[in-house]
Length: 248
Image 1: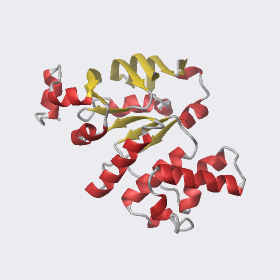
Image 2 (image 1 turned 30 degrees about the vertical axis):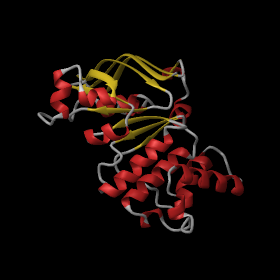
Image 3 (image 1 turned 180 degrees about the vertical axis):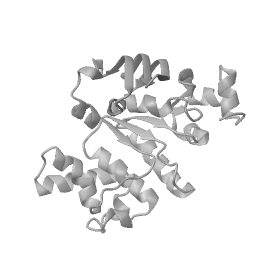
């Protein structure tokens, strides 16, 4: 089932076109990775899926993005960003306790009952595969966690508002290999319940976790296919060159 559908998507910042006629159907409960060199439009595409590009005053957007068949321009933007959550490259915990970081979104949506908040926090931390590491530390500052733990805490904070899609923008760029492996394991588990779109500069990460992979170059979608095929028999020589490290 198609969860998100972009049709002839074009994006400009000032007079610079950063995306050109992007047509992608993102399926429910898949991990779609987006790879490509810097300035290929990967993050601009990701941010278009929950209308974050609109925060940039010079942006101009043409084309259509549908969420469950509804034009996202017709959706309340706060509701859209609740349904399409985002995890950024660097973990950005709030200057609060571990518990309050995860409960923050639920409180913003009007949930005040302490028992309900406790249930939400525990469920989100479990789904982010960090509960066992922090269950006895919930009142401690989130800044006391390691970088990898902070990133999984940010995933839990996103999950606490019950999204349907999670956007990951290079979530392991500042993490060590062990922390990266834990975040990747979390993503693989999350796809059972969520749709995931992953922008990564680490092609090996895309090969490890993605069901399908899209290759962007200079604002264009060069190729989109099953990840195994992209990495073993790509249809376009440019894809093959990027994966082999000939440019990027």
